[in-house]
View 1 (cartoon, protein in one colour):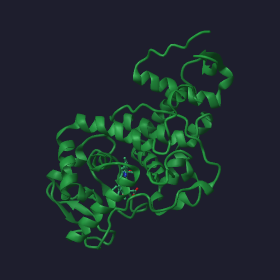
View 2 (cartoon, protein in one colour; view 1 turned 180 degrees about the vertical axis):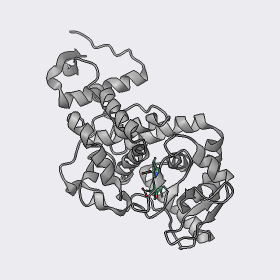
View 3 (cartoon, protein in one colour; view 1 turned 30 degrees about the vertical axis):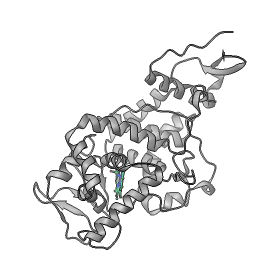
View 4 (cartoon, protein in one colour; view 1 turned 60 degrees about the horizontal axis):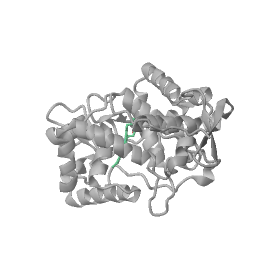
Length: 328
Ligand code: ZEM
């Protein structure tokens, strides 16, 4: 009996497992039969990489044509994952349920049908990958493309067959909680409590929530989607810790306009924005500790973000131990 040797680096192991698990559903016929240990037979792909690398390349080519898609692809993955509820072990990225009504029509998901459509040509070219996996892989590709960390991808999410599997609305955070005046203490407390409640329900602590919200270095608010308006940073398609630095160093005042309550910078222009939920990252003392830490140390942010975003996007997608290596 031939033993399969697995003396590879951790990153290579991840890539190996993704390759085999995607392949096991898509181009199994191309595989070879191998045996591991006693009496266990698995099919291992013969060629390397269907490949996750080829899918990533396809997404990267799309981003070359329109780099503004990058942040929205990150948001697609976040919203498909941020429906997880640790208490009931429901929701999360497994299932790709945001394809269906009612989830696609949840208020928080406004604008994300377009992001799903962008990935359709990739899905058409690589039908072996599930939507649920493609959305997460798309976000990892975008993060890397925008200069952020390479996040090891684990494939194997399945697509739910219908909207019957959608999670309930209300698990994703709102831009503000509590009284309408975001300057009052009650509103600041209520918004911090809201952010904690939402992220605690996924299983994250204060430092992890601050780290994940650091994704607001990317992209912008669209009045046509959330009603809020504008970018958080001046380099919205570059992964960075600029968001924390701006939160701490600029002066933020409530913007006088007809839209929902949001802040604008007043020290270095009035071209940027913060949500009330962003402002609690400096106004809440515990959150502020993490904000200062990440503003001062990009390497720490990059490292923690890679880890926390992987955790977020694997919520409800349980590790299957050694079997995951072989797509079982
Ligand atoms: Zn966001 N986010 N988010 N976020 N988000 C928006 C856009 C983006 C909150 C929120 O209300 C909003 C996380 C956490 C939280 C991104 C990533 C991540 C928008 C604007 C709003 C209103 C949507 C629009 O109009 O298109 C709140 C309240 C959060 C927690 C308290 C986490 C965590 C994220 C990833 C890890 C990204 C990349 C965008 C930009 C999307 C784009 O299309 O440009």
